[in-house]
Length: 264
Image (cartoon, rainbow, N blue to C red; front, top):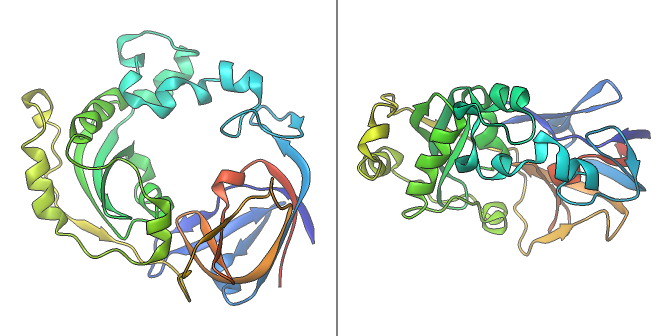
């Protein structure tokens, strides 16, 4: 039994995806524990990004001060179309914002709970797709900054969704989509000023997840409501662990929770 701060699961692209989690410097290969038991007991405290300890988070895994002051929680993090670093305009910390925003970003189409549009830094492919539980993905555009990717995403949101229906994603494997044809259609929706950023490669990334059994009727678990979670692991998809009795546990949404954890 280890005491540790929960962090998101790491992934390695393979067939199926290989999952691991670091606990006090030790890497646990989670695929090896599918069909075995997990024990997680929250110790009634959380650790914010700033390193301070609290009884609970204020919002979005941040304490009050960080949520309103940290560049990690700025509006442009959640709404990339609000980015201003490419104009030299500071939101909260211009140096930080330049490093984050003035980098190549992909605009992509993915099939998770159905078709969606999304953006991510070019260094985060295919990790971003895996974390969203996508079974297929294709790159639509490669742009030089986060703002341009956000602008394109906003335009395409009029035609396709930009959010994953997590319940649908966790319920079954989605029907395959012809992403190459959909990409052609979406290119026509993009204004001329962004056409030069269209990604020429039409390769589709197919993703499979290590799952023994999908839940029949999803029951989402939260440590704030029940501080002890234990049971058999039936699979992993996105950042969710599937447990017996149709239960699912989102590791990423519990980042920063201080827990006792064990696998057996």
